[in-house]
Image 1 (cartoon, rainbow, N blue to C red):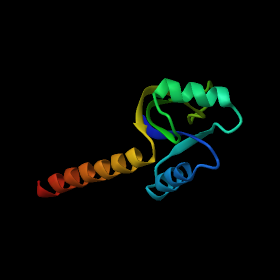
Image 2: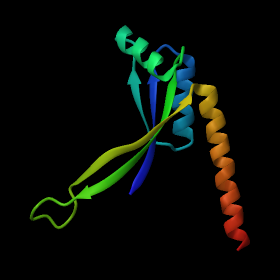
Image 3: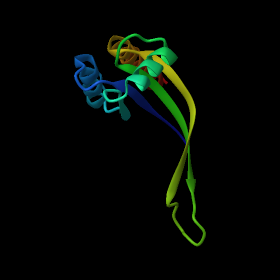
Image 4: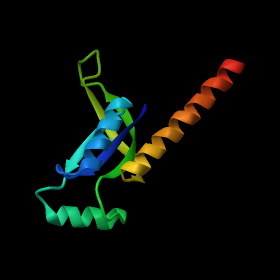
Length: 116
């Protein structure tokens, strides 16, 4: 089974970081947050890795999830998650644009299916 979530690198005093989290919550998207406030080294390394000068830094992460059945159990007790792909979206503005495009493409798919 595949799943998608968003990974945000943020600073607690950043207004755009807060807006990005609020937007993902409003859109009912799963996300995790890494706070960079206490680690200037991680802040610099993350910005360098993704070639971004500001936060938030937003990634879309696609995963493969596999249920694991423990010996003697009838129902799976554990999900093993493997990151299949992580794509840089950018900052808040790019996230907002990305979600608008995603919504439009889903609406087109829904319209095509209702035409059948």
